[in-house]
Length: 169
Image 1: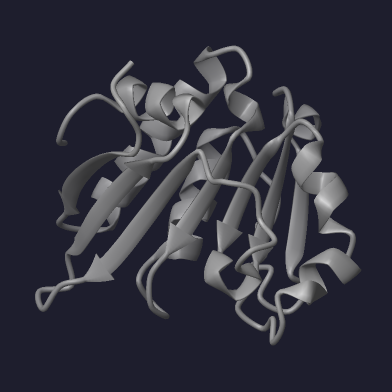
Image 2: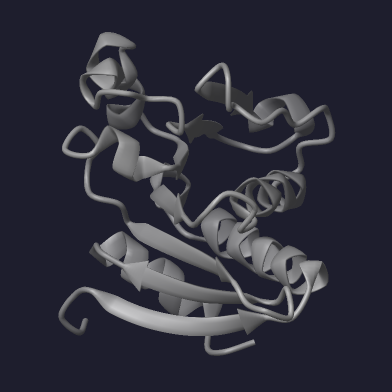
């Protein structure tokens, strides 16, 4: 495999493109051994679409119940077995963290070392505490409301995910 990190860029002209990407990511995550134990970081300003992407991804993974933003709770957990799937998903939103040590105090280290998919919004607020992300997704809003998307594979697992996603949509 090539040296890391591997970077790919995309353009999502609309919400449908985000949803299509989420379905493709769900397919790739579900088709490889150990891929549902990935750590994915979501970067971008307020309103860039991080939570929307997570909601589309959870729907694509089979979640049919209410999908809440973890903005206040910091963590929302989903057992995909509740919807006929396999694995666990932990959705973090570190936006309200004032100090990265809050991550340790909250006991998140155990969650990040356990099997399961970890989706982290605002990971920079827990800087130095999170393990290396397999895949980073950087979202930015363009003047026409489309999204520029940068995908960065930082581990071999992330590289497998990125290769499974194929090229530009």
